[in-house]
View (spheres, rainbow, N blue to C red):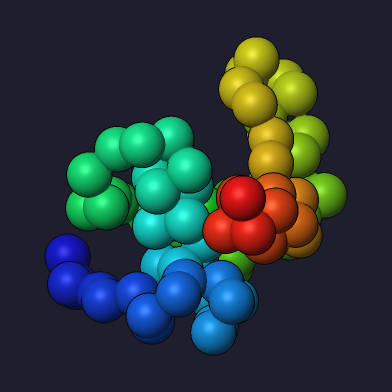
Amino acid sequence: MTLLRAEKDCVLTREGHTELTIALLEMAGLECVGICCEMIGDDGKSMKKDQTKEYADKNNHVFISGDEIIKEYKEFRNQ
């Protein structure tokens, strides 16, 4: 496991997976320490957004896009 550190101001500075994870935790009022992972398809490659959405639907998981997180985080920070 590689340790990562989010940029200051999370997705307002950089729109990466680490920053998205920390933004979600901050909005939830949780400790800003989290784990993110990359979803790998049967072909051994990173899954595309439509594949992850399909996986979420099939397995009754919530799917939230990075764009949705960024939009909500900007509103959250402007409160």
